[in-house]
Length: 264
Image (cartoon, rainbow, N blue to C red):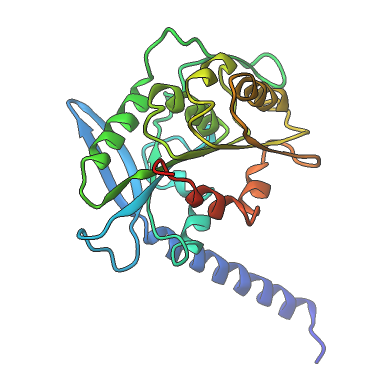
């Protein structure tokens, strides 16, 4: 059967619509929630395990999005990573949380110079958390109080700005996490002394990243090694800033993450 140009266009459009529908379906399974602390509110989405029963216990995965997904719509933060955890739902049942940072805030407390390319970053350790990070930590504390949470299997991950937030929350709450992964992130290498030996890590970056330079992750890996840790490190030779695509395609990432436990 020969397809003319019009038929080809129709088929492509139908495939795109079908793909969008599937994507929307998985995002709808992430329940819309708000965490309120005083006068402050943190929007977040949460994917619960299938056939959830509060009499059972489940791991918790906290995922921090990048700067491009900031806002107040409680939707954009699902752009990257949410489908991965949805697909792994049967094999690795967990409570998966995607908080959303407002447009005018950051996960990590950092000074940023955007006049350089890649951007220049500094992460002072003598400052408190940002409002958004403070709310995330309070949300995490609230989750840890639930009887259905496996407290020895709490995981953290993030990309870009969320990778920076991952490194930051690790030194602010090092006793909580069983494992962590950071994609195209950055942080203070000296802060790794606090968690290098106790939190297994997998760090990802693109060698061609012209937004957050790969040297940022190299520095964090060096810091972890300096202080006795043994991190996994994947540097993707052809990737720019979107190394999350390659990281999420890594078949060993999720099995590795869930293989770690504070009790081991």
